[in-house]
Length: 541
View 1 (tube, rainbow, N blue to C red):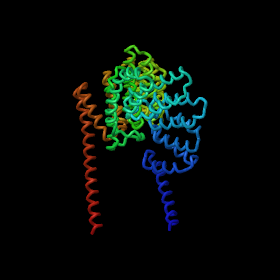
View 2 (spheres, rainbow, N blue to C red):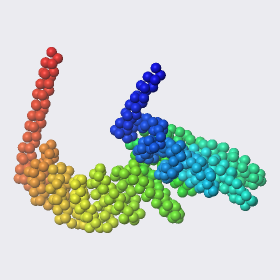
View 3 (cartoon, helix red, strand yellow):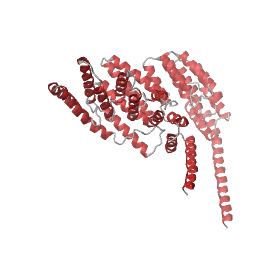
View 4 (tube, helix red, strand yellow):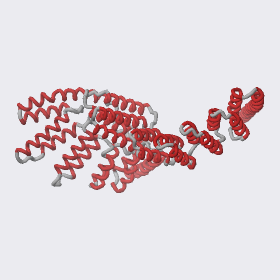
């Protein structure tokens, strides 16, 4: 009986796995299906499971939880070369505390026998402190760093003094950071200083007490404001679910709290660093939300200007570069086809006088095949006109004309640019005429063309244009009355009574035809409904 049960479970398990694979193929963001695939992959040889893990981290590149699972599987098989390549791919951008703990454990376990282990381990801790030292759950890293430094062998008084200074420096940095278990770090620091010299300890601890009390106060607020945030959720496109909305609101509440400067620091660089750390962690879970990317970039840009205005040009330039890097990350990852981010990125680079970089951003946008490039061309033309003149803008318009994906708005924008900016009325008219051949059946294009003709006071040419449109049969029947009404309005403003009456008569004929057609459609619809009711009654009887 036991064997029969086992045999029946295996096909069921395979069926479940196959179903999960099909669900992932149909919807790559199906987290429940991915959970089944991950569980199965963890029970396989890494050589067989690696394609699944690669597909997983490619689909969810900002999820620290998934990277950690993948790395741990490679570590079990002692594929350390693969492990280091994986860390290189994810560590700098994925600020997940568990992933960074995994990184430190890896260094500790695999580099322990190297002659340069102490230097490598110290560098790893410094690296982790720089990236994750502000995390609420960073106490284990701070504590491990101190423990490591204490364990370093010091030969001679000079080396001993260096070790004491290094340990003290880490303690003093740590007690300024709001984190869970900060009380334990403070207690350990007290004991450490007392063990060195009670006289020096009293002075040092009194000097640091206020900073510790401030950090402890903020730590409690920090814990409360982030309690409802799930930092292990992978980024998926907005679903509009209540749970997702709660997470969005929780993240925004946390970021607003950081912007409020709860530490009451007078260092604008530290404040900006804490706020950006909050944004970076938010983007791990809300990477498909363009508003978060824009807010983060805008905050960085604002901080850059403020620091520069204060005279700290070095920090200002650093934040400016970080702003550019943030936009670059966005358009190369989750926002690779989001026009809002591209335009914000281009505007930022233009404001920094980086003309060539701005050109490359617009070119990258209009090269995306699945995006309608029309608005991209329009904005690109405007940028070129502002920075290099109308000739360069005309080159962009030529690109738009040759691009089969471009819509009528590119022609309209180019025509009005010529009219207002270069004062070339005839060039603008030629652009409209060129667009008429391709978009003459689009009411919005014709309305814009008519607006232009009215604007330049070409009454006779405007009448000719109305006649061309109304006799071309290009405008859909359900929109033709709009053109007739506009023609009548035009004649009422600039025409004589004879022209007004003539246009009104022609418009009335079209209106009557339209009413008759609607009446006929309603009659046919009513007849069809009656026939359906009759047939249905026959079937029931």
